[in-house]
Image 1 (cartoon, rainbow, N blue to C red):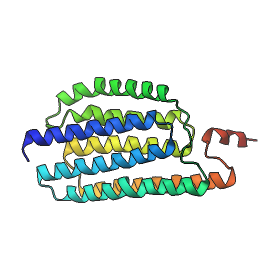
Image 2 (image 1 turned 90 degrees about the horizontal axis):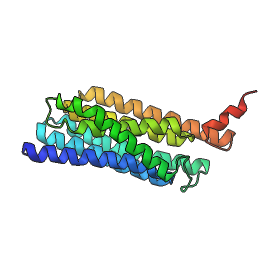
Image 3 (image 1 turned 45 degrees about the vertical axis):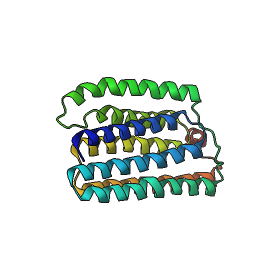
Length: 219
């Protein structure tokens, strides 16, 4: 694979990752948001595989496969299972309206490009233009964690933020040591598992998964 084709493929995929993150924020349907998160996992797996093809680093193909399984299959399927167990409808609405979500995502994307562009120009890597997209994805995920009330939506925000960090790490370093990346995946699985258990307990004990309403328990 020549350098031009490689850089264009990585940039196109990174823009797609950012667009998916914007769609998650603008989407009021929780089930659709989880499906979009699954798509983002597939895109990140593709980025890992493309970088592996270009650099010849065989461990990146393992990273691509693990990313595909964990981010693209396992975690979204687990969230759907949790939704089914606690009786949360697939069309459950989120706290952000569509216009507000689009405005928030657009603003954060502009901030990311304003902050990331000078840093990208100083980067020696040919994929430096991906920096702004990865920052935008991370910022959007962080905003979901802050402004949304439902615990599951906050976990979606955490995963989006982690996806942005993952995209930044793998495109700016062309792959970290496999042991480090396995540790990151393990932390991600633990975080998703703990959130799932918390949601099941909240749904069973309180009948809702709205973290703001937990303040009513204070005596």
